[in-house]
Structure formats: C-alpha cells, structure tokens
Image (tube, rainbow, N blue to C red; front, top):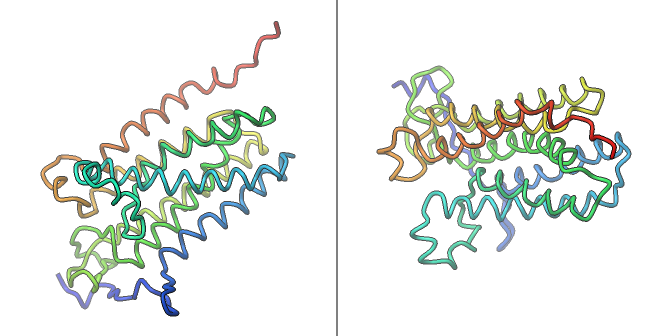
Length: 268
C-alpha cells in the first residue's frame, strides 16, 4: 500500500486547552448534535402547533437517554464481564466507550415516558420526528470519531484511503466518514418524506424507515471497520452487526403494518 497515494491524517483530537479545561473536537461535535437537534425539533413544534414549553423537557430527557443508554450499551454489549465486576468503571464516561445501539434502546423508552403525561402528544408523533434529528446527529458524532482517529477502517488501497498517523501508518477505509455521509443522506431523505407528506407523515413511517436505513447501513459499513473488541475477531459478524439485525427487523415490521397503525379509530 502506498502511503503517498493516501490522505494523511494527524489532526489532534484537542482543539485547545486552558488549565484543566480541554476542548476536544469530539465533545464539541457531540454537543452540536443536541444544539442542532433542538433547533430542528423547534421547527417541527412550531410548524405543527405543539407547545414549545415541552421542548426543553424533551431535549433534557433525550440527552440523558443518549448518554446513559450509549454508555450502558458499550459496557454491557462489548465487555459485560469487566464492567459488571467493576461497576464503578461504568461511570467513567470521560474515558470513552459509547454504543449507539444502547441509545437506540433508551431513546424510545424515554419518549414513551415523555408522552405519558402529555396527552396532546402521541408516541408516533414524537418518535417520527426525533429520529430525523438523530439521523443528522450521526453526521456530527461520526465526524467526531474521525477527528479522534477512532473506529478506524480496515486497510485499503483506494485513492481516498486515510492514514491515521496517530494510530499507525496503514492506509485505511475512512469508515467513520462512510457512516457520517450515509447518516446525512438518511437525514435528508427522512426530512424530504416529512415535507412530502405535508408535515403529517403516516404514524410510524419515519421511525420504520430510520430503523431499516440506519441499521442496514451500519451492518454493511461494519465490514469496512476494524473490530472494536478482540473477541469479535473470531466472529462471522461483529457485535455491531448482530445488534443491528433486530432493529432492521423491527423497522420492517413497523413499515409492513403502517396501514394498521394509521387505521382510524372506530367511534364507540
């Protein structure tokens, strides 16, 4: 493999530091996920006449769900023996280790909690719009992984292969950016479908599409990634792929049942 024919990447994960304060690209982009997500949800709320007073509570709940769910997902899916034996280590989120599949479980749960006390929202209304923001968030988070030179790809001799100099001198697939651009394309598609249905998409349609598209993409792109944990090296499909399959199936089930989900309730 010719390093000279590849993109050389040696950017520092840290933007700057002042004393004990360290500003990193990953943290900045992760925070940007919620800032942009808030603005996008604000657009949905205003467009459809929903009370903005609930948006702050929704944002807080989703942020908590993402951080807690992603952390627990990493600990329990990828190294349960270690973390269950050393539970205090689960709290050390600053040391890294977040799994999107964990967030994919926790977010629907907190959205259910959110609508329980707000009868003017339906579960499908909330989740169909939140997933649009989540897809866009994937662009920022995976870009942060790229700046961190983490979740690197397998060796490649393609013209756009990247040498992550902070890791090694092997040209690799920029798997993080494959995901980032794919998630951005999914965001554009979901937003297009939202507008195509005149801001009132069928219940469950966007959520079902999100699950099928995002986790099918994740399954495919995993083939171009180095495994995250050593135990995955002996597996036909890595953990990220195995965890993606149920989400794809759930999405397909939702899409196949859209007619039933949108059937008008009979008047008693």
